[in-house]
Length: 288
Length: 294
Image 1 (cartoon, rainbow over the protein chains, first blue to last red):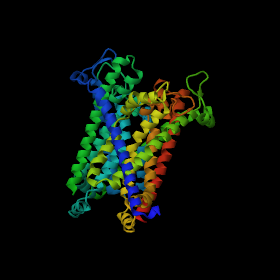
Image 2: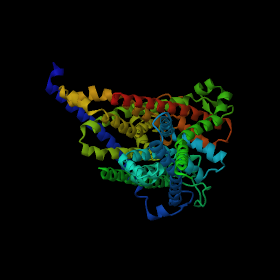
Image 3: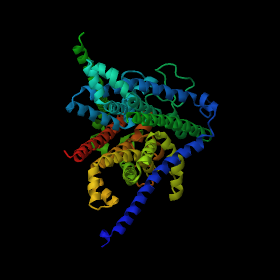
Image 4: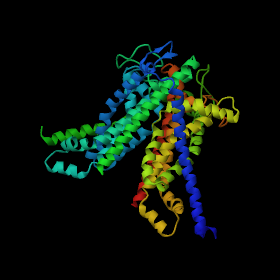
């Protein structure tokens, strides 16, 4: 019978394993094709002027400096709000709370917040920050909205980093008479720092590319001046790409700018992710 | 202040921080319902959910969101048909067949897919995949439900691969050893022992992948074509719930019926993604129970 023939079974295994290998190749190929497309169409547009100049003639010429700066400000703002919030939340869950109902409720909250669609965050930001608190469509509203978007990422990464700090460290500190908080501050946090930093960097990568949460809270397609206060609207890289390809009035001139912007954005995000991966690898080697 | 009171105060301050996620979640629910609930009274919940015409700017306007819900469901299911087989077999390959040294190198590369911003996927779908499908099928436009499905499938891949891989690797080694010792081949061990054990973990990954696909906004806004009529097929332009909110919120006066209807769509969307997440949470718990043998 076929099913008991060992040669047949090994052949079957070989065929299936090859098929599985092919699907992995397909996945890698997709990634390569997308990166190749953006690089090929975008790299020709890049110049020093493209990076550092203001846009000219209604976004048909000139550079993307204000969008780059706007993205930078939004990232900084979101990180300032979400890092302390996320790290302190993680400290509570790992170092203070007893395992039980409260922690599992909090965890359900974190998981579900991570699953909220990005456009819904945008509506929340519109309702709370733009309207209710009166910040208007501004850098501040956008930063706050994005901070909530990346909060789950930062909480999870910090939690993971804190858990991997060995209990011996804590016990040694406590045995020396340190309080729980002193132990956290002087022993646990310094040791968890590389992991927490990895989470923050991943958060930066996410913020830099998010578009839907800021359409109604921070972004504007075109402004002649650089943001001078947190209540100003800002141009941002991802929204610019979207606006240039969908609402541009001179496609022949604006599409290349969109490609160039996409190239810059992709490069930024890939670099940020690479740093995070590198940090994680280095961190896990130190632990061993 | 003695150290005991200080510790207590610190503990409560940290607790407030820890509650932030839940407070934001509740905040989202309050904002959505405050702004969106009135439309359910005005239109009627049945007419809103099952109305087949979405003409928010006509006079008289009609606010039926069935076409938008159908489009979201169509595009998400399409994405899963594409992403589940590819994602699952890739995760099996990475976790059980590939040497560990290569695996440590490949996994971060696949995670890069998750790092690519959605506008860039959108741009790719508009300029490369769309025209390609247009030529193949001889369509009037390349921006269709199929284009959106493929792009969303690609975007859901890293979630499905990464979480399924985690589930498969966390099946205890002794399960595998027992099967191999009984004379099973590696493939038989994977298909008859490992995968059935990991199944609820895999379901979690699929649910989260679906949640990501149905909530994705920018890509579908750019590649799905944007026609708000009832979807007639996979090769026609469609408009999802997320794309409708993103496209129309900017041009509608605050507090108008249209504005409320967009928040109403967000309520529906929020409930759908919330249920995906809850199912994912439940299957995840079941998986840990199964693997830990408790």
